[in-house]
Each structure stands twice: as C-alpha cells, then as structure tokens.
Length: 163
Ligand code: ADP
Image 1: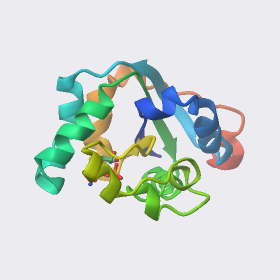
Image 2: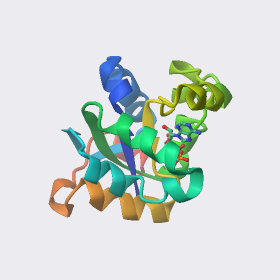
Image 3: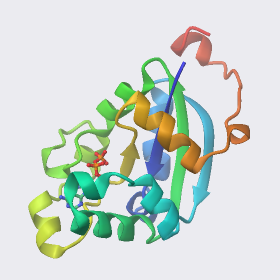
C-alpha cells in the first residue's frame, strides 16, 4: 500500500477547514496511518521545502517558509492504492487560480501567483501533498517517526482497499 504526506497548512487550520478537508480523504476510503498537530519552526519548514529555493527562487522559499511557521499545521500520512497520485489529483495544482472546482485548492481558494508575488506572500493554497512516491518517502520521516504510523484495519478498508 502506498503512503503519502498531507499537511493542512496554517491557512486551512485558521479557516476552520480541517474537518471538511479530512472528510474528503476519508470519503474516498484512504486510511489514516498517522495524524498530529505541529507548530513548525524554521528548521522543520526549511527541511520540508528543501528544494523549493532551487526550483522557484529565494523569495518564494522565504515567503513559503514564513507561511508554514505562521501557525499550527495538521500533518497526516494517508495509505491507499496509488495514494500519492490520488491525493495530488484531489488537491489540484499549486496555483489556486488554475485549480479546477472539485479540487481542494479550487474549492477553497482562488489567489494567483501574480498576486502573491506582488504582495510578496506565499500562495495560501491550504494543503501540501507529496508530489511523487520518492518525495513522499523523503517527506514522511521529516514529520513522523515510524512508531507514529499505526497499522490498523478500519472496517471500510475491506471495501475501499481490498484488505
Ligand atoms: P506544491 O505545494 O503544489 O507541491 P511547490 O512545491 O512548487 O508546489 O511549492 C510549495 C508551496 O510554495 C506552494 O504550495 C505554495 O504555497 C508556495 N508557492 C509556490 N510557488 C509560489 C509563488 N510563485 N509565489 C508564492 N508562493 C508560492
């Protein structure tokens, strides 16, 4: 079974959307392997966004780290069939302006890169979801120890995961 990391970022927590977003993932039958609320510090946020500066530049890295440390984050590891791809699909693309209705970013946000860059703020797109199986394998240990990821068999897993 594939694992993926989801972070409900400070804007999602502050807007009271934790329950609604979590419900979407439960509804498709993904299994929660681990979940906790964390106040990230600069070190944790920089580790998590280790390649963002290279990909998008120092200004975006600074603004995004600032955004991630601005309040508590709900960190979740989901397990499911090809869970990385599924969770990305449900999350939508990085830029809320481009995210289609029906995706989490498209349903709860609309800001553009252009507006965020003029304002020198990180794009508040509510959620982080691992971009690939390799990213998930690197990101999960940043947020969870192996002991914090629990093996269990919820009743629905028989139907949604074929367990
Ligand atoms: P994703 O979160 O979709 O995997 P990235 O890893 O490229 O996307 O970016 C990480 C986070 O950095 C984004 O979710 C967003 O919050 C922020 N971000 C990315 N690009 C920009 C940008 N041009 N301006 C402001 N913030 C950005």
